[in-house]
Amino acid sequence: MNPANTDNQASEKNLEAMRHFSETYAKRTGTYFCVDPSVTAVVIEGLAKHKDDLGSPLCPCRHYEDKKAEVSAAFWNCPCVPMRERKECHCMLFLTSDNDFAGQQQEISLEEIIAVRESMA
Image 1 (cartoon, rainbow, N blue to C red):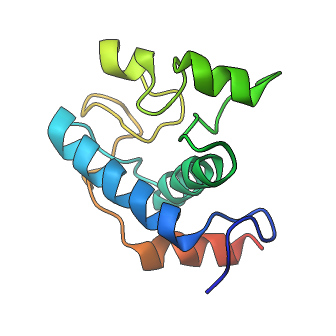
Image 2: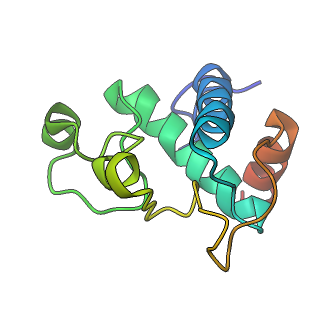
Image 3: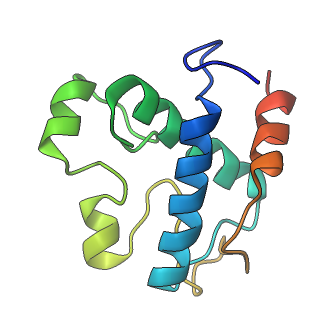
């Protein structure tokens, strides 16, 4: 298993924490993961990496001039304000059932996430 911040990968501790959070949040909000599980895996990995580096799961699908300032502002910390207020997820992690890219899954295994990570290495 890899330690945190190695080769730009998240620690397994935060990867598992973000996986669990994502599943729980999808079920609670009635949203679904992307029909392409690699999208889900990459976003969860990005959230976990930001949690490692910044202490907070900052949205990984946006560009920030100052990530630490963005974490403090909390607007883009997952779940971000657009997701909480309007169920709009820029990352395509949490999709409403009417979204063309929504799958039927609200779960993803740690093994699936790691397999996607390794396929991209």
